[in-house]
Length: 191
Ligand SMILES: [Zn+2]
Image 1 (cartoon, rainbow, N blue to C red):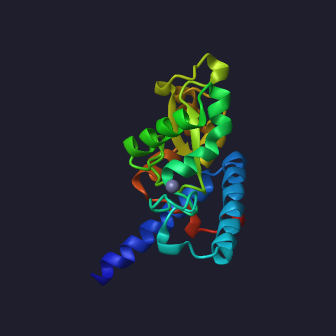
Image 2 (image 1 turned 60 degrees about the vertical axis):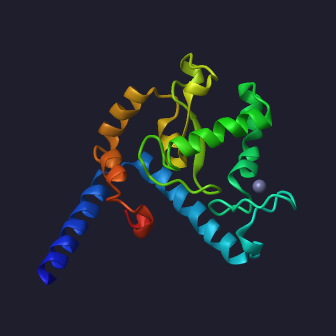
């Protein structure tokens, strides 16, 4: 039992070391940004007034539970994506339905890495085929991904993105999917 724990710790530190070695400038910058956002969130949480009964504050009548670190339910929080909606040619309400369906179908996880998403922190809408690559605004071309994934993915197609990740940090996606990396546990600024 004790040996098991020692071994796990060793494996863990090897994984972290490997991960750090494979980090390139680009990934580091993305992670640093996320780290800064997380610090902001912690502060925001400390200052956040308690939401009564964990209920959505959008209207008095909405009794739905709040999601993530927002003060709204999933439906009402999804209205925040109204700019994405407008740009994509949908009304706020139409896009809200699309958003909720995506969130439910993906079990609240990033479609690329499988990382659990936190509304209000790291959820972004991604065009599977980027608009700049002749992708469209069809529902089938949308998915939800973690913010850092969207940043790294940029205007790549999925295949190009995977190739890109393979070059800059070969194990990032695999580790992220397996939940082997909890990046918030590590001080990335140390490099
Ligand atoms: Zn609500």
